[in-house]
Length: 109
Image 1 (tube, rainbow, N blue to C red):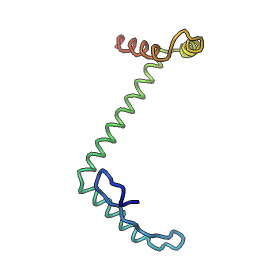
Image 2: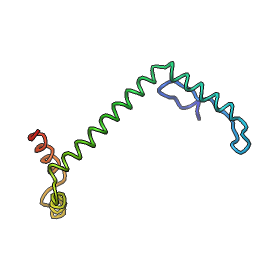
Image 3: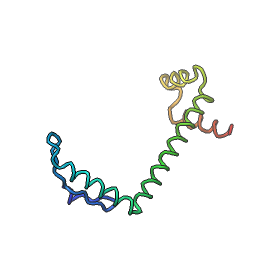
Image 4: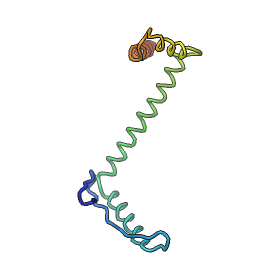
């Protein structure tokens, strides 16, 4: 199965037999892990992965902070329940409400 799959970084994982209950093969597993670490250190893939991780982390923090700010400013005490009531009574749809709240947040800066 491993020979059929390809990885974006070009690494071909070795197949290492180990038995946890006896400790057999632990040295070979450790060696395979060290080879992988060395491969990543020498590869440009490490930079690409780090860049992707930092991008994702930044966007997640931004998303969370913006979400909390919008909730705090646009849906204060009880407003969220009013939105849910509007949705339940079909006085509004979720897409329109979200667009309106986002537009109000952007407009108020």
